[in-house]
Length: 135
View 1 (spheres, rainbow, N blue to C red):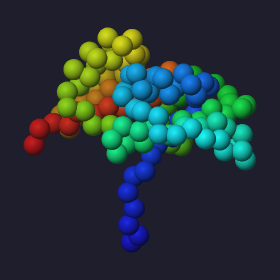
View 2: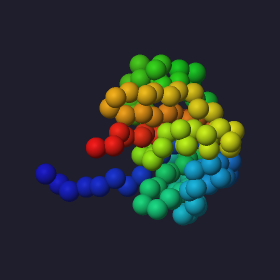
View 3: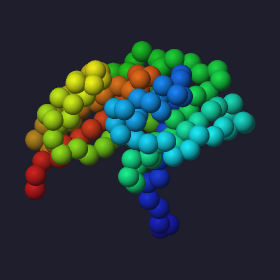
View 4: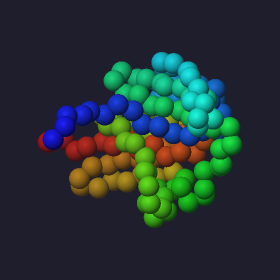
């Protein structure tokens, strides 16, 4: 089996500068580099937080996020990539901080196997944050 490790997640946004600002201000990512991908007709940026990277794409002719893709229970019904998830220490503290920053938290789950929430970025894309139970 070939060896591999996670490199980055990617998300399409309508405004690259606004997304770079949002991911920095809300989640603490810093700009690693900006670039273009001419064959795809996109401006792009790689943002980083420690070992985590997120690639942001602003396509020339991008379409808005379909309504069903911005709510976790309905998004699951559309085949394809869904979201990325990050581990957090405290769900309640995380939600409180997101609410202080005016971030939309559309879905919270509390289960025996763990708890988590989804937030929407500045373009409506879903990002999950998970608090795992103590061992």
